[in-house]
Length: 400
Image (cartoon, rainbow, N blue to C red; front, side):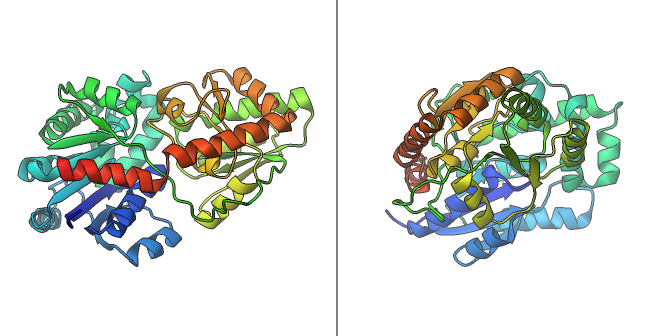
């Protein structure tokens, strides 16, 4: 396939699955013979940054609020530089105003790889959750984009509704101007078609995981801990998880531990909940390397990931690579990466007793846990490798 000059752009509010997939797509599109530059702003783990920068040029992606002359200059410079590329990949999310400018100036080149609509704008449409329940995360993300003074004004109680309506209008105009949209799951496809009123078909390309630290003939280790991974934000549903784990310990008297890997604005609330409920066998780890995360996957008993309406969910796929089954939410795209009663279990994410029941099922029945782990590994290798994801992504990019 002929070389294509590609710009992949991504604004990160935190470092998680979306960021990993963006970095992996840039690396593997480069590996497949294309000229790839990454425009990225936000947190990135040191080991990932070192690895990506060896093969892909990384440029800072500015924000779009035209309050200061420097912001305007940065946006104009970005638009000028992006005109040189054959395709511009908006990977997952970029700040709404930057997206709007690019969609009006370079729409014929832009392909949106969509995980989900920007949840700060559309959460009520997705889950019925009101801004008040998400304010801690909405405000922290806004502060990263626009700074504290502007955030305190435009997200104040008396201006919040007008701000969101304005940004929703900007977002709809932006998305309808993109040349093509590729969703990361069937769930995401249906959501974006509904929210943005899209009539054209939307293709689906699942994210993929890389076999970093993976040995095909290595026997899995099943230690006495359950693993949960994800940002400390409301939609990851950690408080239900903690209730479920407390119930599980009470019912079984087990010495099993729960290891939570993540960070974010709800960290202090999660730690407070642990103290309040006297959950001494819960370990919280933040800012770990990819190698450390892989070690947790390799040695945990199973994974619990009960996020609310997650677009896809990379955590059960990463765990499956190391033969670990997953308990996942029966809502959103998580149902597309885990096969119920084969590679894991679906649960009601609002019902902590339901979650606890399947924790008991997998912890007390080691044969079942191992069988589901083997099924999970086959599922990942058949459907969710980064090579497969990038090849399909490449095909659609070239044809768009």
